Each structure stands twice: as C-alpha cells, then as structure tokens.
Image (cartoon, rainbow over all chains, first blue to last red; front, side, top):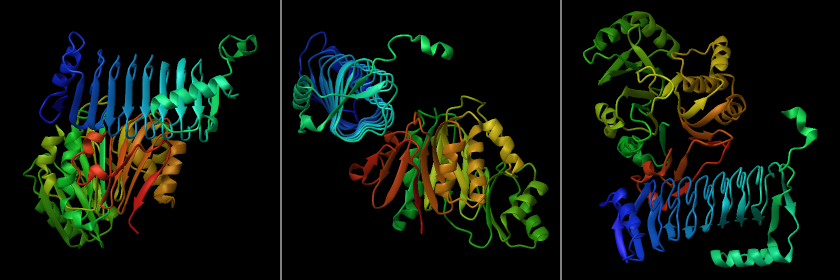
Length: 227
Length: 298
C-alpha cells in the first residue's frame, strides 16, 4: 500500500500518481490522508486500484471514475462520483448534492444521507443510499437504479426515463411522470442482489418501486396549445 | 461565486477567541471570493446607547474632532476607538439621532453599521489582507458572520463590498443572486427602508429589517423571505443575539453546518471548518432547502 498525504503532497501530484497507474500498474492499493474538504480528489482514475481517502472530500471526488474502487472515510461534497463509468465509490459518511450525477456505470454507495439531486440525469449507474435523499433526486434519470433506504424529498424522479427507483421510507412527492409501480419477483431479486453488492442489510420486500409512466415520451396532440 | 462563513458561540469561555477561530474560516474562502471581504462581529455591547462603525479611507481622519462635535451638539457622552480605516463610536443617544448627526455633520464618512452590539469591517482586497488590517484574530465577541466576494454583477469597489446592514444590529451575508430586487427595493423604500447601493444582497437585508420592524420574529421574517424573495440564495444572518441560516427552495448555492456543544459554524464549503476545535467529532450536515435554522440566546 502506498500512502500519500494531502498535507505534504499537492492534489495535482496525487492525482497524477494515480493516473500514471493507467499506463503501467505498479501499485494496486493507495491511501490518501489529510483530506480536509479538498476538491477533485481521485478524479479521472482509469485503473483497477483500491483508493482509501481518510477525511472529508470536497467537490467531485472520484468523478469520471473507471474501474477503481474508492472509499471516502468521511463526508463528500457536491458531485461525488459524477459521470462515473465503472468501478465502485463508497462514502462512509454523508454526501452533498448531485451525487452520482450523469454517471454511466459502476456502483455508488452512500452509507449516510445524500443531498438534493442525487442521481440527476443518471445514465446507468447503480446508487444505493443508506439514509435519505433530498429533493429532485433522479431528475431525468435515464438508466440504472437508485435505492433509498430512508426517505426521498420532493419531486422524486421528475421527467424520468428508464431508471428504476426503490424507496423504503416515505416520498415527499413524486415528480412529473413518475409513478409507483408493482414490485414483481424480478425486481425483488434484482434489489436483493444490489443491496448485497452494496453491503447494506435491508429486506427487499420493505421497499416500494417507482418508475416512469412513459407519458412524456411522445408528443401528444392534446398538449399542442402549450407550445 | 462568493463565500460565506459564520460562527456562533454557545460556550462563553470561547468569546475571547472568536476572532482567532474565525480568521482561518474567512481566509479559507479566498478561492470563492478574492476581490473584497468583510465581517460583522457581535460583542462589546453598548446597552444604553448606540454603537456605530464608521469608515473614512484616510487613516489620519480626525475622528476626535467628529466625536467632540457630537458631544457638543447632542449633549451626550461619546467614546471612540480607531481600527485602520474604521472608527467605532459609542454614543449615549439613540441610533436614529446618532446616524442623523453623522450624515449631516460628516457626509464624507460612511456608516457601516449601527446598533448596540454589531461592528462591520470590510475592505477591497484579499481576505487575508483584510483580516490582518483589522487584526481580526485579536477580536472578541459572541458571534460573527463574514463574506468573501467574487464580483460578477458590479465592480470591485468598497460600495459593492459585503456584508450589508440596513438596520440596527442586523446583518446578512449572501451567496447567490436575487432576481426581484429592483421591484422589492422600490416597495421597501416606500415603507421607509433606506438603501445605500443598487446591490441585490442589500435588498435581502432590507427586507428582513422591514419584516422585523413589522413585529416578525427572526423565524417569521425568514419564512416571509422564502415567500417574497425570488432568486438564488444561501443566507447567514446575524442579529443582536441570534444567528440564522436559510437556503432558497432550489438550494443550488452550497452550505454546510457544523455544531458542537461549544459552537455552531456555517460555511459555503467544508474546507472553511477544518480548523475549528473538535470539528472531527462535530455534527456536520448540509442544511435543507427552504428550512430555517435559528439559534438565539434566551
């Protein structure tokens, strides 16, 4: 394991050392210490590394991640794992808004709460939140799944495409074109597997499923006066 | 952009260190606001009288002459001390009398704040320079709020520097932009609220002052602000004995709160909180949209 300290090494040097592993991987396990809300830690990784970040991360931590397994042993600021392609990102504490925004793949686990707009415009990532999510979560979600073990704020899944949403607690309100759907065996099986992979101990049967009513997909002549 | 920070002490034993605890918070927000900075500190209370913070760009300005004129004309005790470009006047008269006197007698002097407890200090420049100029780390008090500005809508000038105060002991720091400030300013002027600039944040402060004058509690004033202010805002507000944080219903401007048994701290980013004692074990959370957080001394 190689340890890099943000107190003595610049963020740019740390990120460069991690990026260099994409060409030739010489060290799989990394620890970054001394994080005090610094932005852009471990962004743009492109190798099967294991990266532990000690402390709180600022904005865009592990953004654009590919293949790497990143654990933040603290809270994360805005846009954690935004535009992730693959790999896993785990936040041991809480995450600010826009967690997993636009992410295409991989698994994002937030053990605490996530703020507003969690999974906004998500395109295939799987997001599991141990606590609650804020308003406008999954806005325009296109693919992937969002699992919320706590409650969801206002306008959940507004203008949703094909992202699957599972919420255990209450939902303040559903956004436009988002509806509750039947939880069939295939969904229970999928959710059980996802919770298992996320390491979260919850009963899949205690969740409700939400998805798109698919009423905003096509132009309707009844709405012509709105244009 | 802009950065805002606030620190409200629950433990009186820390009051002598308020400035020292706050200085690194303000400097940490330099990335968000390198153009000008300022803060409003509450403490050193003038119970039966008025405290004014006055500014003149000339550090050799004859403040004693102004104080002497006030003693003669108002027949009131006046004491004062100078801090760089600013002088703090303690006058044994009400705030309206005190400010009217300064405006008439010394129009070249800018009144930064009026009240019993508040002192506002601000300048153009880097937060670190401004903290040094006013010896922030040596200041004592009960609570303090600050602002670092990245100018986007208007020039980098003293007039555009935050924070703004539009009423006794009331101060507001703002990250964001209000979109209905012109109309609201006109309406508030009609109600007798006085504005010094064309700045949108000053309208936010003026609106709260107006609501408080109407008899609202701080919480009620902020509930009304959520209804009547349009735009983006994260506000941190100081009053004589209160401290509040509120974000607009969309909550796109960042905010983080931390609370221990000793203090409540607010910042635009967590980076500004890392130097506080016991922050490792503090309750740290993101304030929710359109939710009002208030701490007040009973």
